[in-house]
Amino acid sequence: MDTPKAKQVKSRERVQQHGEVFTNEREVNAMLDLVKHETERIDSRFLEPACGDGNFLAEILRRKLRVCRSFVEQGKNTQLEYEKNAVLAVSSIYGIELLTDNAITCRERLFKIFHDEYCALYGDNVKEECMDSIRYLLSKNIIIGNALTYHRVDNPDEWIIISEWSLLGGGMMNRRDYEFSYLVASSHGNDLFSDDPSKTYEPVHFLKLKPQSYGE
Image 1 (cartoon, one colour):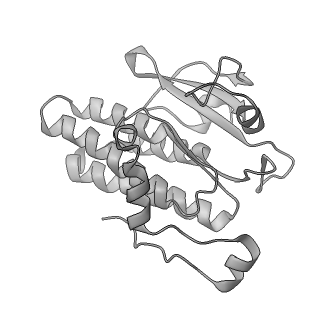
Image 2 (cartoon, helix red, strand yellow; image 1 turned 90 degrees about the vertical axis):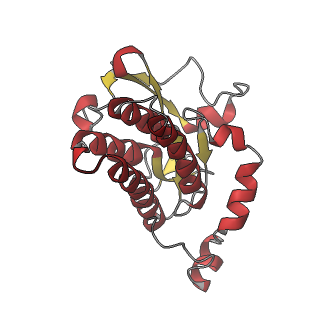
């Protein structure tokens, strides 16, 4: 089960100071249904520049994981293939959030959605290294930052960096980093990213995504 649904308003002070009002579930689903085919593509990328505690991102992840599960139930995917698809699904979801507590809650909420689905499918056979890869992706993709100034909130001297993740052959995951300000200023058609990253990394297996793999 998912975490309890958040109220639309946490406090009057937060509304006054930050304009914080959460979108309710009905509106979230109605808006996502406008691009339903994209929400059901495992590798389709979504970026929410004011993600709150994850109402939109949580529903996107649920939809993607339902597709991953359907491949298993149809006998098309093994556990390893499910894990690869689930990692790809999480890697395609991005959020930027000004308030630290919201960003942390969002990471925890998305991880729980994956964890509960993964455990429901595989029980005692779940792999800690897969869960570690998911945790790492969420730590990188759900960013505590100001999407208007392009800077991180938890480290104001740093630019917001968005990592592009893509699967290569043999289960290897490619990572390329971009400054968010560059992505906003540039036009790449339907693609969020371009061929001009600020940093590239050696490919890492999708079950080995962790800070040590990238010298962090």
